[in-house]
Every structure is written in structure tokens, then in C-alpha cells.
Image (cartoon, rainbow, N blue to C red):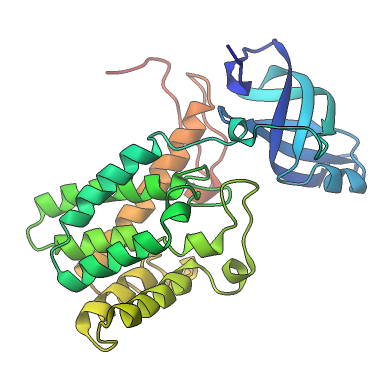
Length: 317
């Protein structure tokens, strides 16, 4: 059976082909350069330090590089770290199965398609239903394969669809509990809110921000896609149906300082922002807890204002 990075125990040596998921050139207390790396395969990512690095090493081992690594897993402050014996880039001529280097969503694509499709059926407002179906069809391949982020939440293959699906499940519970919620509008907002990331990001392999992503951003990109879809479907550009959806996607970051051009001014827009924030937080925290030993705290999470989270020693039921 093929062993992946996280299948190894502390003290075990390995020789694996890995992906440089993140690479940062830093200086130690003595002023010497080193590379802080995150090396990964489909099982997950582990930190590693490449000591006495030269500036040209930052280029050799830049984010997205496929490398051959010999090393062992060791403990560092309660979590795994790779001690590197040797590392070198894999040449383009070598046949590397990239699918073995990219982590995937907890649910398979077929299952996610089926479940999201069931939510689409529940969108009863005709124009919203048509817009969702049109845009899901237009961006089908990207929507079900792209990550939801470059390095933060749901940053794995299929992460965008999985983030959407978990949000829809949260939205269903809220709509069941609060009769005032417009279920169709909330479901539509969940499906569309991050769809601009199919244009903002480059894809699941060696994910980078595109020029559109850096210059415009996914909130404005999906707003533009909504307007174009409405034109194609013959939906009145001045209709309230379209206006409400545009507000949903443009306000879903919730605060100006989070990059939102508008603050939520609909009940459903407020819920969309809170569900999005909740799902991103849960994903980030559980990911770090999974890399933390029982009885220890996670590293500080930048997405949670630098807070650290405790993993209990006992697995409670």
C-alpha cells in the first residue's frame, strides 16, 4: 500500500515526492536566511525548515514546486515537523501523478453534485432558480474542482463546492428554525457567493491569484457574472429579483474592513455573511486541531485573531 506523508509516525524516515504548498524566505535570530516550507501530498501538509538558504533557493523551492524529499518526522512544540536530509526539485521530464499531491474535499464530486442539486430544486423563485442553474452549468468543471482559497479555508481540490454545500446545510437549519427567512434567497446566496473564485483563483494545482483576482476580486467578479447571466436569460436588469441577489454577493464579507463594498441590509444577507464566516472558522480550526497532538494547543491562527485552540486528551462522545 502506498504510504503518504501523514501515514508516517514520529521518528520514521521517508523518501517522498511532495508539493511545496507554501514557501517563505525568512531570517533567524543571527540574521541567516532559511526557508519556512509547507510540504504536502494528498494526506495533508507538514512544516519544514530549509536552513542556510540562499536567495536563489527561494526561487528553486517556490510555492507550487514539486520536490523529492528525504527526511523524517519529528516533534516540534506539539506538532509534526519534517527534518530534511535532502530536497531537490523534480524535473519536468519525470512523470509525477499530481493527483497524489493534492488534498481533496471530504466528500466526492458525485455526492456533492447530487446534494447541491437537491438544494437547487428547493429554490422556488423562478428568476433565482434560472440564474443558479445557468451559472452552475457555465462554471461546472471549475466550481466542483477549485479550492475556496489559496491557503486559508477549504484550500484543497473541491473545496469551493464543499464550502458551498456545508453552508447550504447550515442555511437549511436556520431556515427551519426562523420562519421569516426567505429560504430560496438564502440558498441562492450560498451557492453564488463565492462562485467568483473560479475566476479569482488559478485552479486546484499550484493555486495562485489570477490578474482578475488581484485587480478585481471575487465579490465584484460574481456580481458581473450575475448581470451577464441576467442579460443572457432575458431577466430585467432593474428587477428586484436581480437587485437582491447582487446585494447578497456584494455584502457577504459583512464589513468594510473585510473587503465588503456594502454592509448586509437584508436578513438573508446578514445570515449569509454569518454562515460564511462560521464555516470558514470551523474549517480552519478543525484543520489545525487535526495537526495538533491531544493535550496540546494549536499554533496561533491568524484567521482567528491569533488565538490558539486546545485539543482535549480524551476523545469525547
